[in-house]
Amino acid sequence: MDVSAKNRHSLFNHRRAFLLFLMMMTVIGIYLLLSTVHVLYAKADNGDVLIAERVSADTSFSSRYTHSVAKCPIIEKYEVSNNYEMVLMESWNCSFGAGIETEPPPGATDRLEDGFYIIDEIDKPFQEVLFHPVSFTDQTITIDEETWNISKEPFVGRTFALTIKKENWFSYLWTKLS
Image (cartoon, rainbow, N blue to C red; front, side):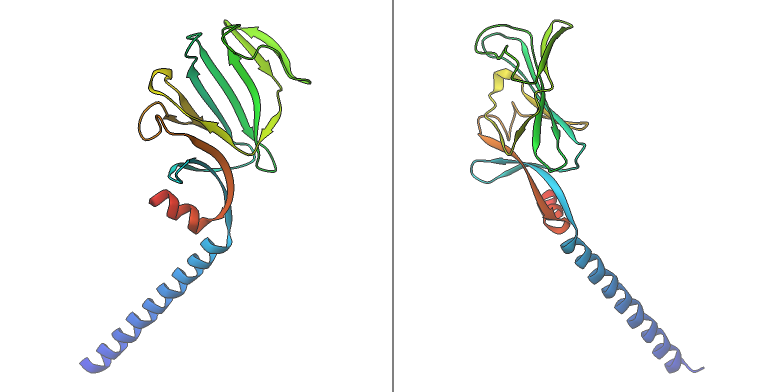
């Protein structure tokens, strides 16, 4: 085989590899556009995305802050339902005053544990949960095992909402990377 035949064969292999690469990228792109995920967003009132996390029907998340008057921790625990609503399941506090809820809603139970008054089985669905954190409340949001201190930048002093949206993978990845 002469040199020009080897070059043609090598060029043919490079073209074939490039076409195979393009086909794989096209298949991946179509997959990312057609498959969907559910995303828990924290979006500021000006539209800024502060948090974007994939969730499933068994995802749990919580909010914890120090009450500004009672100076005790308030913890609210949520679960993502099968129809992707945020469901308030439990509320924990250690004070009986300063506007803190102490009456369980119908169907809920209450108990005392380790100095906390706990309202269980609240089972109240939300489409949106609003926050307006301030620096002195030391407020956090925990989604599964990841925690954000929302009493610090870029959250502090901004009103934002937690919502769950169904999106294609490409949109989710674009939001996460930007």
